[in-house]
Image (cartoon, rainbow, N blue to C red):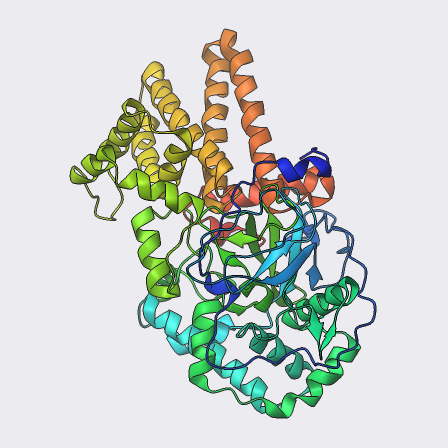
Length: 549
């Protein structure tokens, strides 16, 4: 993270390849967007806001466990990003040849870095323009049904809320509807260098920058005074039918990111919890975030929280992103295997992903060793590979000299199976009486979980799954260190070194996912405790004082 900006242009562009048709950038639903007025004021754009280095007031608003400073900016916060128009479904991921003056996206619309970015830099923080009240969904669900029904109810509640806003036009609803409609069509999106004129007049770079900034403000329902006046004048033209809204939110709204609808429905159908104890959000509309295209090897990571009574999304870079590079994230959990990813993306978003990870995995999964592995697949009841299957894969990758990059991609796609395997192997250690046998098991799990850590570090850094693996590694070495203090004092130097290494890895991952946190060690520790509580305990979410995800 200490590299000088001048060196970033030649840095490895981890996670920058994107798909050929991500819905996030161009989810058309048959309705033209509200557009930037042709006679909009092209005065000087506002200066770029200073970096947002401390988001702890958003994360810990509900707690008084330690002193929290006031947020250093007003929301929404838009960082060093631009919106541009790209190619079409058949174009593979672009290569700008190291030319950081070229700003391009693969398909439709997308966000690009307006300058060199470092891991942990905040890209934007924005409240949802519309969100589904959990209480309304809870009442309609009435403890009866499965995840599919719960998702349908959440969709319907959100549609009703948007329709009500369109039928009762006010200044605030004009801005919200403008933002909702703006994510639906790319007709008037500024593009560099394509859209260089307006009313027949060529725009200079200064005017282009302003046009871009204005559209970003519309997407966050935070327009300038001039644009707001135009927005109010267009309100009489709103005519949004239910099917159009429903189609748009099913492709662009952001649903549960931690618990899925099935888990929430199962809990709500039982007597274990109520609406206040289980999950604090269901579905939200974030038009600016909807501009981000998909990659299975992304360069951005998002977090949800609530601030001043509103649902909020916080987005950080998770790798070095050179200027002009497209911002991407994954529409699916990173721990989804290649075949499942391809099917889900095709079925739900109507595109075939051609990111670097998919291209590498496509070649690997068609190889002889992988086909042999699949032919001998042993499924568990939950669909995950058995422990012996994981061991067999590791052995086959070793003897077939599979490149490290490909090994890492394959491991990430099977991360759920690895986690199941770790739990199965570690469970008996609680009753083992032989110290050496117990330590052998821990070393075995630590070796594989270390491989998973480096896999996530190169692809999907600071994802939820990555942080969960890091907590496991830290716990393994901590227990080993405690044992060494008690039984093998001569080993404590080695074990203490391992504890320090994994502590550092944990801290780095959290300061990528949650930003620099004001370099406040107390806040960092609080974040570490929060994620450990949630990710390493089956009922951790119920116990967490703060509900950021």
